[in-house]
Amino acid sequence: MNPPGSVHPRVPSRHPATIAVHAGRPATEPDAPLNPPVVFASTYVGSIPAGQGERGYGRYGNPTWSALEEAVGALEGGTALAYASGMAAAHAALELVPVGGRLVLPRHCYSGVAGAAAGRADRDGLRIAAVDVADTDQVLSAADGADLVWLEAPTNPMIEVADLPTICSALRGRVTTLVDSTFATPLRQRPLALGADIVLHSGTKFFSGHSDALLGLLIANDPEIFRKIEVTRRSQGSTPGTMEAYLVLRGLRTLPLRLAAAEANAGVLAERLASHPVVQRVRYPGLTTDPGHRRAKAIMAGFGSLLSIELADAATADAFIAALDLWVFATSLGGVESMLERRRRWAEELPTVPEGLVRMSVGVEHLDDLWADLTQALDQASSVRSA
Ligand SMILES: *Cc1c(COP(=O)(O)O)cnc(C)c1O
Image (cartoon, rainbow, N blue to C red; front, side, top):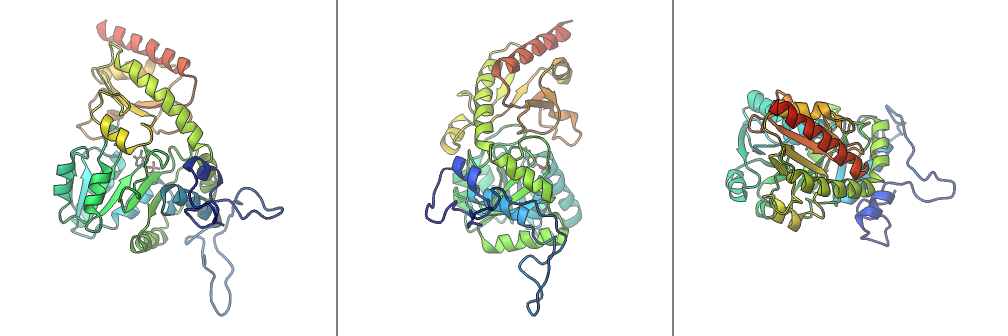
C-alpha cells in the first residue's frame, strides 16, 4: 500500500476529495482487487527465527484496519489507529492522563466523554478543569500544568467553536492537545495542521455515513504519543471489527459528496428555522448572527451539517419531534438520513444544555421534503403549546 499522506509517491498533495476516494487501496497490479480485501484473522503465521511477522496476532493489527487507517491518516495528515468505537478511542486517549493528573475538558462536550473523564476522576483522582471552549483565555489559563487539553470543535450538542489555531499553537510542545473533530470531519478542518497533537473521530458518524457501523479513530504525529495509544489498544483489546473497518472505509469514499449535500441543506434550514416564530434560537456557525460564525469561517472549510435549535421547553420539543414524519428520531448523527433528538432526554446530558434543545443532523434528502416536515411539525408543536 502507499505510504500515508500521499496517494501516489510522485504526487504528494492531492485534494482531500481525491484522497478520500483513492487512499488505502491495494497496489495497482494486474488482477489485484480495487478494494482492500476483508481479512478475518485472529492470528498470523509466524516464522523462525524471527518468531512472528509485523502483525503477529489479531489484536495487534489487521490488513483491513490498516487500509482504513491509511486513508484516514492521509486525510488528517498523521498516523491513524482504529478502535472499536469513538468511546474506545476516547478511553485510550484519556489513558494519557496519569493517576492524579490534570485534564482540561470542555464544559459542553460529548456526554460519553464527560462521563468517562468523571469515572477517571473518581477512580484515579484526575483533576478536571471544565472550560468554555469558546473562551480562549480561559482554556489557556486552565491548561497551565495540565497533562491533556481535550477540545471538541464544534461541540456536541451546543455547536460552540473553539479557536483551535490559537489554542493549539500556544500549547504546542508544552501540553498535549486533543481535538474531537467528529462534527467537522477532515474535510472541514485538520487539527494536526493547526498544531494539535491528537485528533479523535467517531467513525460511527460521518465516516460511516450510513448508520450501520461503530468505529473510532485516533490520529497523531508524535511517535511517542502514537506508541502509547497503540499499546493501550493492544492491552485493552478495544479493536474494531474487520467488517466495520471495511464499511467505514467504504463510507469514507463518498464523504465529500454526502457532506457537501448535507451542509447545503443545513445552511438553508438554519436560515429558515432562525426566522420561524416557534424556534427561540438556532445554533449553527453558518449563520452570520452565530457567536462562532467569524471563527468558524476563518478555521473551517465549511460549516458542517449539524445544528441545534431551542424550543420553549421539553414538552414543546417532544411534541415537535413526535409530529415529524420524515426526520428520524434517534441518537446519532452524520448519516445520510436526517436525524434529531432532544438531548436532555438522556440523564447523562449536562444540565447546562437547555431542556428544549433539539440537536439536528441534517441529511442528504431533498430540501423541500425536509422543510415541509419541519414546518408541519413546528405548527403542531405550537398548537399543543397554545391549547
Ligand atoms: C458519537 C460521538 C462520540 C462517541 O463515538 P461512538 O462511536 O458512539 O463511541 C464521541 N465524540 C463525539 C463528538 C460524538 O458525536
